View (spheres, one colour):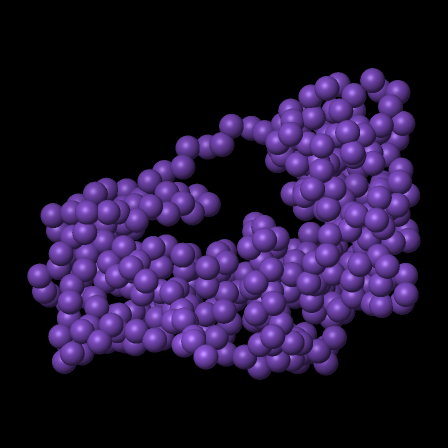
Length: 366
């Protein structure tokens, strides 16, 4: 088995030339061959959005951002709250805050042009080793070793790496660095991404049509799904809390803004109690934004964060038109709620109390 032919990047690139996915941020191999250069802004924006998120989810967000903020200068000039509103639902909200901060730095310090050196790019907000390598390779075609989740899976199978993740990450990076060609490194990185997304998938990989099947040790052993080797996931603790959805007679909903730093920082939310490891439904309404006869709804909101599972009891009240918003809060009109910077967990809470409240109003028929 160890005599399998070493992987050849040229074979993968030839496959990519005929099978590259068409993505709104990508310059395909045919256009590259005609001299069309990738837009570093699009590359950076897409790579930040794609962290921990799927292509299908990212596409509409990317297109909306590009329509509203077509270049880094436009994004730098936007208000942070508008950026958070546009990001709402995409998750991992520190990315949005860093996105805005990075755009400001690029606009102010580099005249709106992304730097082309690794050390300088790594110094920008929200850009780590992976994103810096992706920008260098894809946007500037520099020989940088790119390793995302898809690439980790492909490399782990190619070399049948039996070291469990995440301990195997440095081994994978070493293999990837040796494979990365000096020319077309951006196309090579995107080819590996496409290979992992469409053929070398987590379940039931299509080895019969893989351009690298003859070079893959896991395929030769007949067990590609065994790689990458995973360590058992640690127990995810449960936290509990209460969400208070106050709805005025005109459909306005009471909201407040979370602190700038920390989980869901800067996002909008309905008032909630603290999220703790204990259930205390008897005294939950003591944490309500104002004293009233709150109704506890039968359905709880369940939301899974990276490090814990959250269970929210939802309380609703129909507030009078004269009810004033407590300090630091505001009434968001029925027409405005859908455009607020509401994370998914808060949309779930509002929808539990007022179905359809967070959905954009449909345009009237012509």
